[in-house]
Length: 460
Ligand SMILES: Cc1cc2nc3c(=O)[nH]c(=O)nc-3n(C[C@H](O)[C@H](O)[C@H](O)COP(=O)(O)OP(=O)(O)OC[C@H]3O[C@@H](n4cnc5c(N)ncnc54)[C@H](O)[C@@H]3O)c2cc1C
Ligand code: SF4
Image (cartoon, rainbow, N blue to C red; front, side):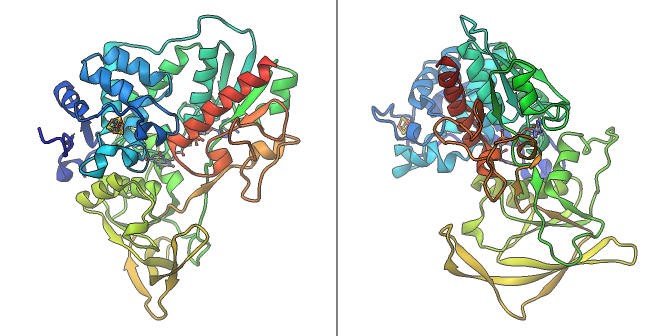
């Protein structure tokens, strides 16, 4: 084997998968995984670990894969991560662990994500579970939200011996992992539910259909129900719109609504009672992972899809793999383009969208070059649906019903990065609710830090 080149991973054919919701990437088998694992140099000062927000012992688990010992490889990973089958599928490895791997200097970095996925999937098939706490502490902690931050915080606290209950507003646990990221990237029954069962197997209780701030408040949990600390991992589920003329037309959706219908309510399935619009030609506005997911969902539901993004290819914030897959499947990218108006027909349904061409100007405060309109370059795209994937903000319900909980001007909860401590005693927070829309692994990192913070607070 050429040590500079990674073992390729098998995928569903692009033409075939554009018509179904089955998982795109098929993952490594034993032989492929063990072969890829031999490319790891087992560096004494592994740069990859520094690139992982939850500090997985990457060379340690890869060494176990090399030896064919999946059970031990899984235990190494699960010391740091509660959701390895999820992370192996959706983490932006190219800018994290794999982005730092020394193998990447002269060739392909080691396929850390695909190896993590292999270990997690194989361990699941073998029925291997993470190790729980030996002793209980007899202290109750409430976790609000069952997304990656909440699940991680709950899992870590349970491993330390705390009595943890997760309160989830929706009828299913998982946060964005179940309502946002589509089945073709992250299977729900086979992967997400199984990882949540692993967290529950540590002793974590889960109460769904409980909206904190409506069903019960944080103060009531602490004063009346005996919870000595609370972690808020309520995410950032409030969609943004452009506020352009015509945005109220029928056929304009937020990506959140569109994806929730398809993923959580299974509207893509003919037998589902939840309706979803099957557009003929759909424009998706935005360039992040959410935009790619909405575009690829609309494509699978039968639409011709255009992604309209105001910056260029280099600036697309979505994972490279997702952009590559979207292009392979036939999605058209209208880059350096921005919508200015949506037009409706006489019945109020979308019939077209006017866009304007952009060019890149000076860098803004984020360091990225700002897009600037090219005067007179407007043009129209005929379409019957528009999906806005422009980012999300935290829902203000919890902050507005919890006295003494500080938020910033973007309505994100203010919390210390090192331990998740908020302005309110005994209340900790992390994930998208604090940072605004970010990534699964950053949310998990914040959940871990808060679990440590809660343990220190309750041990005093
Ligand atoms: C479509 C889409 C695709 C994405 N793709 C990727 C990707 O490929 N890679 C990646 O790393 N990241 C991706 N992300 C981002 C990533 O999913 C999030 O950053 C991550 O899920 C944040 O985790 P969290 O725990 O903070 O919040 P969430 O996952 O949002 O979970 C919050 C949970 O809290 C619950 N909740 C909210 N309010 C209350 C309340 N008042 N009471 C009780 N429960 C409440 C919600 O119902 C939800 O279940 C994507 C996001 C979206 C939307
Ligand atoms: S940096 Fe790359 S080669 Fe070195 S230990 Fe990490 S994965 Fe292995």
